[in-house]
Image (cartoon, rainbow, N blue to C red):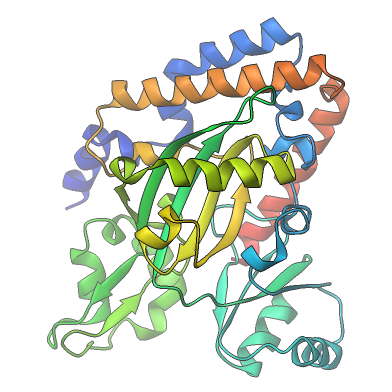
Length: 346
């Protein structure tokens, strides 16, 4: 079984380590660094987000710039706030269980949790070592990602990617335990250690026929979510919706994670909520789960890097400075320390 999994990883590029996947095209990234004269050329891409949204930016700065009617109700919690004050703050904000909690500065779904009781909230609060957010659980049934970029000199941008997300889940058959269902799942079986950490206390439970058990509530590919490419659904109205958002926010390059009532609702610009905007560090995740060869995926990535370079260079020439080497280095070091800390508590 271990040998089979090893060869499955070798021959499926979507399962490769990030650095292994990107190494063959890294020369293009460094070429843009040379052309711009800055390792951090991308820092000017989204001027209103820290480091252009490459890494280490807080969700608060993103939510504060988006139209309030398009984002879930959110409050920010200091990790050292007394628990009694936490409960008061949550109650005064009008939250009802269940809701979502996640670090204000986070990534890859680390420490993302669905909170269903006061006891669970207290445990999370006592454990998490950083500021986090409490956010409404949006129950709109369809979760999607939209990748969008726009050159600042143009009023119109490009919706380059549109995918539907299916959270990592198993369905009961009345016979198999949760452990057995995970072992048979095409993606979850590669994450057995993580699954045992999160759900080990339920491993021997037999799920009734048809019961859906969510293994992760984070819609990230690196958390096992499955993507369906909806590129053929992109229409002119979608472009207009995201052009308007970009013009309001100066978000020129990145990916919107969204919940909506239906694909048609989003295409018509109605009945949707923006869960997050990921800036220039966002991966064009429409390369996954759609049958692309690795060479096709590289073509998509390189196309996006070219757009990122052109946006960043234009903003730089028009008064948005690149971050200095020291500032960028120190920021990345601090971010890496922050994320290593989060991983210890995840």
